[in-house]
Image (cartoon, rainbow over all chains, first blue to last red; front, side):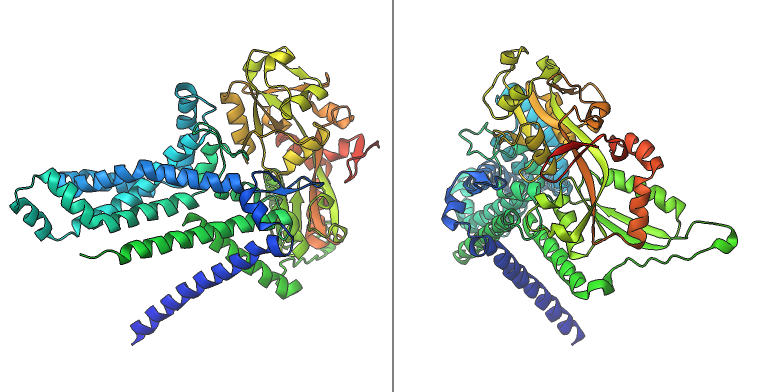
Amino acid sequence: MRGKVLVILCAVIMISATISITIFLGSKGLQSFIKNGVSLIEFITSTHWNPTNKANPEYGALPFIFGSFAVTLLSALVAAPLGIGGAIFMTEIAPSWGRKILQPVIELLVGIPSVVYGFIGLTVLVPFIREHVGGLGFSLLSGTIVLSIMILPTITTIATDAMSSLPKSLREGSYALGATRWQTIRKVLIPAALPSLMTAIVLGMSRAFGEALAVQMVIGNVRNLPSSILDASATLTTIITLNMGHTTYGSVENNTLWSMGFILLVMSFAFILLIRYLSSRRKL
Amino acid sequence: MKSLKKFSLLTLLAALMVFAAACGGGASTDKTEGTDTKTNGQKNKELSGSLSVSGSSAMQPLIAAAAEEFMNENPNVDIQVQAGGSGTGLSQVAEGSVQIGNSDVFAEEKEGIPADKLVDHKVAVVGMTAAVNPKVGIKDIKKEDLMKVFTGKITNWKELGGKDQKIVLVNRPDSSGTRAIFNKFALDGATPAEGITEDSSNTVKKIINETDGAVGYLAFSYFTDNSVTPLSIDGVKPTAENVQSGDFPVWAYQHSYTKGEAEGLAKAFLVYLMSNDIQTSLLKEQGYLPVTKMKVERDAEGNQKDL
């Protein structure tokens, strides 16, 4: 009985925390539109961001919204094949020794704090890209690479679980029909696990979307829309972390930062809805 | 997901702030007791209690070092110094959640701060100048050229007699105090062109050092080695003497704000910060200029006059 009360209490606390964050962020995030009269259309479609210009402040957050989506999608493009490939390796190709090596490696990647990723990116990756690829080094590409490595463990772990939870009968049935191992993986196992694999990718993407510190150190934080992958860019999270401490609570600048935070929350909800949709399709 | 965590923390902090504000003076930690101990032959009042200070991350090392020494002299005093940015410091001191709020800029310049309720204590001066990658090959720049560089009208250093290198701008965030001061006094209020933006001066220094043709701006205290080249402006070298005499234009006060006149422990600490000892030794060690040696002064509008 006491155990039941305890877990119900935990659940209630968690739910109310989430609800209060949503309410708080919603009311703070909408203030810049309601109280300060910033146009919502301008906020999400204009590319001119100049909040400190007293005479003519401009609040166009499109470059940051674009930057957030760009690094998220690009890093998912890099990390998804790697993560799913690693998962197939661990579950189908070399389940015993492969897992023994790859699992600790993945777990190690999770344990590294994001500031360390950022610092390695700033010290190693940025100069490398500047010298060998082009541009300034501070670029969407650097942000993408750092994020890909950061979300790799998320994708790999969930994909591995998905693959290893497939019933043995699927594999046996496929082999009984004379399919090779590769044919089994490609035609039977991947399609069967696809909804879970998609969930893995979406979860990785939502992590990438919210990451701030590591990206901030390598992306350059430029207000312009990037025209190539080697251009510096900025994301919603980097603009929030760069400016939050300097602005005063309640000012328009501060409120627009909360609005960006609210966009992140809305996106996070969207990602979760996507996951719910994907897992509801999952029928075995 | 990471941002969610951050926001929940902020929410919690905000909730705490509201709570602290609601509790009013009751929650304030400023419990100063001055007990005269003349009977022991000591003239000093023994201070005790605790003091919380927050604000400008640029001032944090200085205030923390001064607080350390102050606590050594007054063992019953506890001073907590937090960074967090000028905006945070001003907001918190106006709300009464800290006793001293540090800022790089005048409270009048920050939107949403009841500047008339705050009392300004200028505790130090910081000089700033443009810094370039040493390979650029110039050491002096005319102010109008500096403006052209930062507004993107000049894009190659060879136009200014330097190497044939593309100019790479390194900025600070929009709302940063350092950026505001540099824009106001070095660029005469011009809006700089887009460039890489970094929050920490150390990162700015690192980037300028590593990137060919890079130019940014740093406080004098960061010119400790040859990794970046500080620029003279219109032939005036960026030195403490030139700032003090008013010849070098790019400098700012470091402000400590209190809500209403400083009282008790906050007052004692501010007096201590202005003492000759701190102004001439600790400030210099930390790379600041003593405010007591200034021969010119400035108001919130940026008007300068001789003292």
